[in-house]
Amino acid sequence: MITFDMLLKMPALKTLNVVAGINGLNREIKVVSIMDAPDSYKWLKGGELILTTAYLFGGDSKLLELALMNLIDAGSSGLGIKKDRFLKDIPEELIIIADKHQFPILEIPYHFGWSDIIASFYELLYNVTENTHCTIEPHHIKEIYNAGRWGSRQLMEKLTEYFRTPLAVLLNNKKIQMDNGLPGVKLIGAALESAPVFLEKMGDDVLTIGKYFLTVLNIPFLYQHNVEYLAVMSQDRGLFAEIRKLFHFLSDLVEREKIVTTDKIQVYRKFMISIVSGKVTKEEIHSFEAFRGTDETIYSGIMLIFSSNTMAVYSKVLGELKNTRLLRIGKANPHIVDNISDHEAIVMFELDAKDDNESYKEWQRIFFDDIEYSMQEYQDGYISMGRFYSRLEDIVTSYMEAREAYFIGQRLWEDRRCFSYSILSAYSVLHQAHPSKVDLSYIEILNKHKAGFSFDCLSTLEAYFRCDGYKKAADKLQIHENTMRYRLQRISDFLHLDIDDPIVTHSLVTQIMMWRLLQNNGKNL
Image 1 (tube, helix red, strand yellow):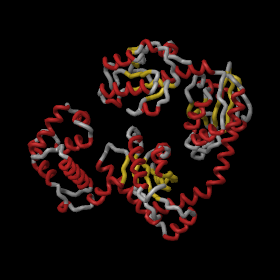
Image 2 (cartoon, one colour):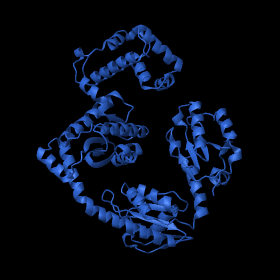
Image 3 (cartoon, one colour):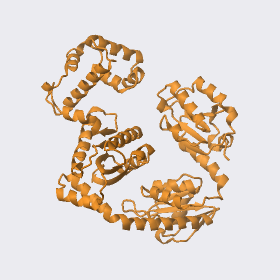
Image 4 (cartoon, helix red, strand yellow):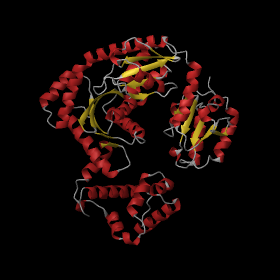
């Protein structure tokens, strides 16, 4: 068992300051994790040391107190907060709560990296359990196989969960691509560099490095046509036989999957490329329907991914599809072609909705809400989605809707990552309208008299409508909350409107969005 007291005695962590919960230093730490969302506590299993920069809380001490109570209730071990990043000082209220519950809070210096703490934890964990490893069960093999399909990093991370031993991924030239950071892993590169070994012929050979043993295995998955290898280092030679046995099973699964899915993949790929080209014929549609060979009603829809790493975004999509709320409504089978053009992929969903013919709309609504939330912190990717249709003939329409959603969404919401045609369909019609046919009276008045204001009225209104409350809107504009209230009151008095009235809000939002679209389309007002 690893406790706070043990962790803080590690050489690299002796400068960490325990600011609260000093009586809880005997708490067990099972894992170190990063808090990347305010509701991360929902997925905690107990025993986690949670690290955060406090960026998520925007300086809101009440929100931070609520997060602390959620961590305590979830059975976490403690909380580490980086100082002078987004939080100047640990709030006194937080210290009182932590002391009461004997819940340690660590004050982490600005220069400290998360890896300093995580590496120390694993070093301690490795030293405690270095001669043990778990037995791989059949369901573990499937989990490792599914992880390996998405890349060598995902494969290595999953293997580290079962084998707490130094691992590294390398190419045939012995160049290390990545490692899992466990103690001793840096010895791998030096050992392979000095040893006259050919990775592809190493087989069952084992190198001896001081108190460690080292072997290299051929990773059975092929990533972007590159052959990669896994270097395994351990003090226990018996571990190698178990990992070799695991890789034998993985190779069998890979070969079996190739045989089963090659034809299917090619058929879907050809059909989806035809959709993108806009030249899909009725004959192709009928042929594809015959290939699917089902009498069940399948709702089909198109998603587009725009990213420099489309497969990373796609893995997020696959993660959201496991949501039990979605599975209760229907099961979606996604198919991807990830090289449509530079940084673009097309995903075709086939949804078997279980209930009435409206259930697919509910499925899409839940899915889009979830994926939009998970993409908020992802800075390298956009998702756009068309509607679902029961007739396969309408799949091209869904594709065009996905493109339209991306085109419009980027012009309306520069800070969003996901766009759904179901939400933007009204703007799709409006953005093609002639200015003279659209009521933009409020916008015209504000623009006509903008010289009388010392601030941008439209930007102020947009920030207020998009943010939850005056404070967040003020933070977005980098002004004081009272300044935000003053500006909104000026606009309200000038237009003789109550901008908090839902009907007025809807009218103003619509006019602002319409004005933005017309500006982006180059139409002068």
